Image (cartoon, rainbow, N blue to C red; front, side, top):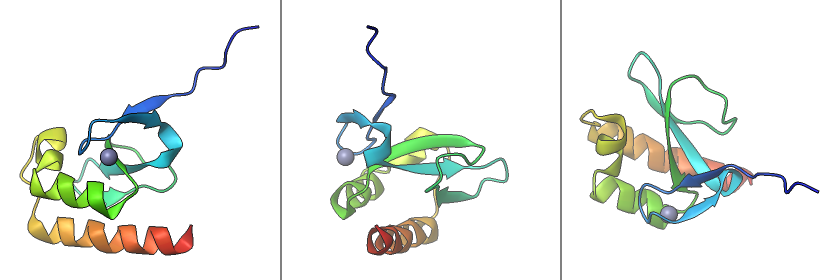
Length: 92
Ligand SMILES: [Zn+2]
């Protein structure tokens, strides 16, 4: 029997690979808006980070998102992502 392939994504902060669902998808849409995509279905360029404050904070400090999206991500966007992560963890 063929083993079912689980899509793996790499965290932009710690570089560990994990099954897609334990990582948080961050999307930049065509309008340049950056947000957490809990549905994993939003259109746009996606980057993945562990759903932990540690990894998101590290991604912010190392400007990993700037590299992933090839743009300068504004500090206010990072603040917003941290807030969204807190909400996300509260709901799950
Ligand atoms: Zn990570």
